[in-house]
Image (tube, helix red, strand yellow):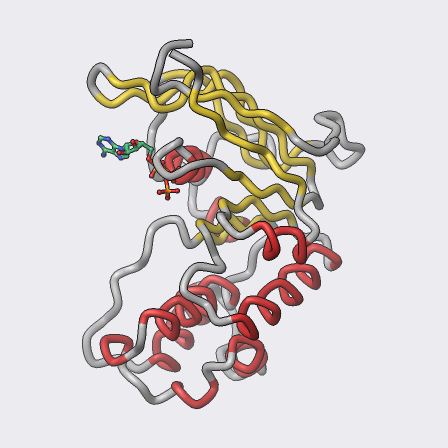
Amino acid sequence: MSDGQVSATRDRGMSGNAPGGNAVEVTGLTVTYGSTTVLDQVDLQVPTGAVVALTGENGVGKSTLLRCVTGLQKPSGGAVAVFGEPPESGPGFWRRVATTVESPTWYHGLTVREHLDLVRVANGEDPADGRIDEVCGLLGITGLADSLPITLSSGQRQRFLLAATFVRPSRLLVLDEPEQRLDTAAKRALAAHLRDYLAAGGTLLMASHDEQFWHDVGADEVGLHRAEG
Ligand SMILES: Nc1ncnc2c1ncn2[C@@H]1O[C@H](COP(=O)(O)OP(=O)(O)OP(=O)(O)O)[C@@H](O)[C@H]1O
């Protein structure tokens, strides 16, 4: 491969033939921007119920890979399957997959709580069933319920983004550096929540620069590497 291309290396053991099948299966994924190849023939399997952390230097293509997995970006080549189907194959996809890969646009004038109510209702769930309170509690944003998103600090906004993701029903979480901008206690709480999500049968694919964090979540590391010249 030439400079600017990457390969994926599984640094810890992970079978591509899990009994429950693969929640995510990426085969020969290639992404080019003009004459620059960012991802070149990348393969990745995330077995159902597993947790994988994509790691690697800035610009190596982690977010690009995650966008392709969620169907938010069309690859130049290769194939992606999520629970056996191409991503974004219909509204049902977003009932199974929740992601922070693209930040949503917030509605001016709606509070944190009102946004979370909206997400819950749009997904056919009861906003008063206690789930929002539970998620806000674990992320430490209960006291921000009446705040407008524009008034939040960067770390508070990250907690809010995670909350809006966690109140959606999902079987697969695709998270882009979920630990970013969080303080130490919030990172620990987030890691504990993600472990609970996995214990309940969920699958997690994330990008992360924080080794302690992805160790705490119990992730298998898959390193993306720029190829030598
Ligand atoms: N729309 C675009 N047009 C051109 N190049 C792009 C575009 N989006 C991303 N890139 C390039 O693709 C490469 C991979 O970007 P990506 O955001 O996937 O990296 P990353 O591994 O997630 O980086 P970081 O660790 O900094 O978040 C970078 O060199 C980036 O400049």
